[in-house]
Image (tube, rainbow over all chains, first blue to last red; front, side, top):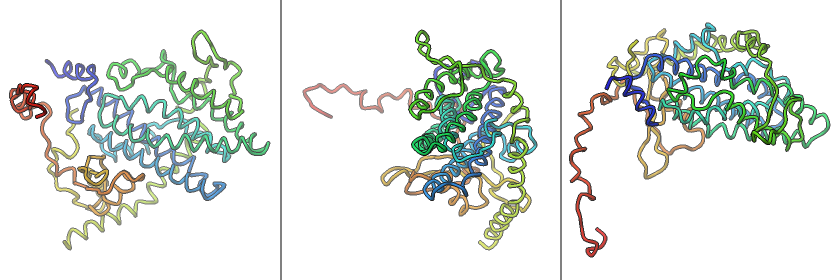
Length: 307
Length: 112
C-alpha cells in the first residue's frame, strides 16, 4: 500500500498520526499553520486580561486572574511544543507572528474596557474556545489532541470563573448590572465570529474534515455555542443583543441573526481596534527581555565549562 | 519538504549554549503522577540547562499538583524506533503461546 493510502486508512480507522509517521506535506503544513495560530492566540490572549490584573476588584479576583493568565501562557507553550513535533522551530513561529505573517484569533483585537469584560471573556470567549477545543481533543494528530486534553481541563476553570464574575455583577447594583449587560453587548458578536466564516465560505474546512483535523463544521460549532449560552444569559437576567434570536422548536435549536461579516474581515485583515497595539506589545516584550535569554544562555555555558 | 522528528534522530550536541544562538535546546518532560506510578511523558519545552528545564517544567506542566516527581531529558538523547520498520516490534504476533489464554485448562481445576 502506498504511504498516502496507509495514512488515510489510519486516519479513517480513528487511529492517531504520530510525529514520525509518514504524512502528506499539505497535512503537515495545515497543522503547523493551525497549531501555531492557536498557540499565538493563547499568548496574545494574555494581554487583554493582563490589562486588569492590577485593577482587579479584590485580592481573590487578582489571584484568580493571575492564575488564568499563567494558564494561557502554559497553553501557548503546550501548543508550540506540539507544532514543533512537525518540524517547525519555535523561532520560526514566533518570528512569523512578530512579522505579521502568522495570525492569531481576532477576538483579542477587541479592548477590555471594564472589569465586566473579564467576566464576559471567561464566559463567552473561553466558552466558544472550549466548544472548538473539545472537538480538537479528537483531532487525528496525536500531539495536538493530547495538548487539547490538557487545555480543556484547565479552560473549564476559566469559563466558570468568568460566569461567576457575571453572576456577582448581576446580583449587584443597577450600575453593576448595566456593566455586565454592556460587556455582553460588546462581546457577543465577536464571540460568534470566533467560529470563523460560514461553511460555504471556509476555504480549509473540507480537506481538514477528511483528514479529521476538524471534526465539526464552523456553523455547527457556532450553533452548539448559541444553544448552550442563551439559557446561561437568561439565568443572569441579561439580554443577548440579537433581535432575531429565538427558539425554533422545529429545528430544536435557537435561530439567530447574521454576523456582520464586514467587521469580521476588517479585524482579520488588521483593522480591528487593537491589532497594532497587541502586536507591538508582543514584540517589545520579546525585545526588552532579550537580556534574560542571553543571561540564561551565558550562565548555562559557564556552568558547563566549570563542570 | 522532509522533516525529522524533533530530537529523536538529531545527534547534534545538546545546548552548545553560544550567546546569540537564538533557540535553547529541547527537553522532554516526564512526570510521576503519584507514588507507585512510573514517570509518564507530559510534553516538551526549551531551556538552556537542566536546572532551568526543571523549573520551567514545574511552571508549564505541574500548575495543579499533577505530579510528585519530574524528569527532564534532552530530546536529542532519545533514540527512537522507526515507525515504518514493522519488523522490530512485530515478532510477538506469531507467538500466541506467550499468552495465558493459549492454554486450555478444564474448569474443574479452578482459577489459574
